[in-house]
Length: 191
Length: 191
DNA sequence: CCATAAAGAATGAATGTTCATTCCGTTTTG
DNA sequence: CAAAACGGAATGAACATTCATTCTTTATGG
Picture: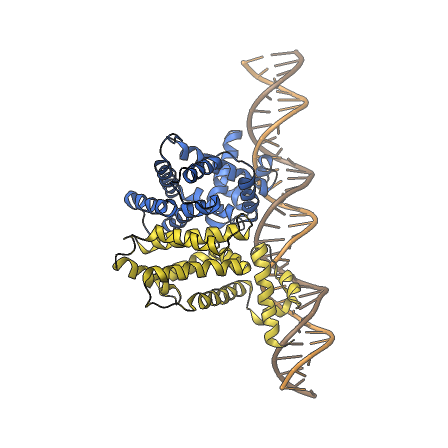
């Protein structure tokens, strides 16, 4: 196994175990075993568990943003852009439950709050796509005149909630239902 | 301090510390100290930490439901009922940030998933108020014809999201903004 | 009404466990 | 062969829980 393979195995194992068991349910020894690696080896690639967690978050988020922005254009009309991002996000979460659960774990943790603060105050790439969409929507009078944060909640609160419910098996979201759900989110933000 | 006082102090301390620091950031010793009580004393009232956590959840949820149902009547029109529950919930969360954070902690934990499953399958009092509202809304063709779970997500996903943002200081929700937010949620579920 | 004993409650130091991290002998690589 | 990578036992800190002891309340008898 090459050097990079090992790092990847650690990251994969951490994703699987933390998504399923949470940060505190997934000890380093367990991650090492799942990765087929000695416990000490993890520390050759990550200074400590916090760094592993944060780095893994970065990778998961980056991959998510990349997929989301495929075929996205700020030239298209607001509504179309909104539906693109909404269905894209929901589809992605459903297709990648481990990533979704990991992102949720991260957001509902001390890590998450700090990170969120950075995102809203400073400018983090990926976030400005949303900010831009909502800014445009408001200034073009297509969306309700509400604070950015509220529009964000109206748009993505339901997406996260249904993704969770789908992954936990409380509902089955097929393509038709995904489309209807995102349309309903649009009804929430549109003027 | 009487017997009941001591139990109450433990519950209060646990609420404060767990809301702020999470289940894993709030050791029993710390809860005991904050409660002004010996570490062993907690175990006279709660078999172990899990029981304390679950029992505290029960109490917090019960209080929340009681407040929510003040002045609520299933006789009123759907929209009015929806706005009552929505604004009621949002106001309550904003006025009681500790309770809100605690509920969030609980939901995003292994405890929470089991609890949620029970709620959706079996019938837990308090939950049927929502179920009934959405059932009525759909059958009277006032709401979109979507699965209960999706309607629930559309209605309360945004409420939880903005409550979180308000409590973390990312937005200030006054009465006017609360009303606008819940109206927007209504736009999401209404036909 | 007091003295005394029994029961109940409370305490916090001690225990055992779990875990992140380190250390050092071994293996692989270049 | 030297250097880097690796493994996994060893270490020490943090934590939930226990339990022998102390304190408080209540009951009893004179």
